[in-house]
Image (cartoon, rainbow, N blue to C red; front, side, top):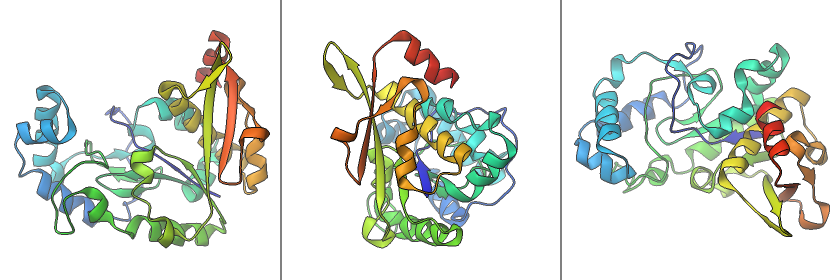
Length: 260
């Protein structure tokens, strides 16, 4: 199976360098060229960010062509990447990730773990006018889906495990993808109520991606064995396309997920 995750807003600019070129590097250059024409205020409004972040990303786009680059799976530093903890993966798990783990990106479209990328912030839902339309979804069209399909076929993957957010997976044209999509859902149970808590769900999606790479999972049925951080599969709430996990909302469980 091929697994997809979202990028992160927070970056670790002490990360190691990348080893490969992104498949849509030319698309990233085209978007960066458009973005560098925007003012700091334009960027703040487009992504709802502070003036300081607007100035930082204005400078990043201005210097994009000559920027130092980093490995994608190392430079992204958000909650999903805490769960993934790519740096601690064994060599065989990293090798599996090279073929089976992909990162969706507003600027780069689709990334492998060790692709070399410049620091940036450009969220997939951004209204950045481009030759294809008013938003990044229009710019990418069915390109991401077709690339995922080609990469899945190259490694014999027969399904996509969607560990990305709704915003980012919305850039995958599922008709063009033409593969079954399985979406894990992670619930926290407290006082008889079970709900998604964004912070923990993001970490759990990263931990699921790690589980898939570590165990070289190819059979969708084996997803049910995921149990990091106290999560357990809920067969009565799951379906072929949506596999649900739940755990008691306890401090010990949260600590176990962070440490996995």
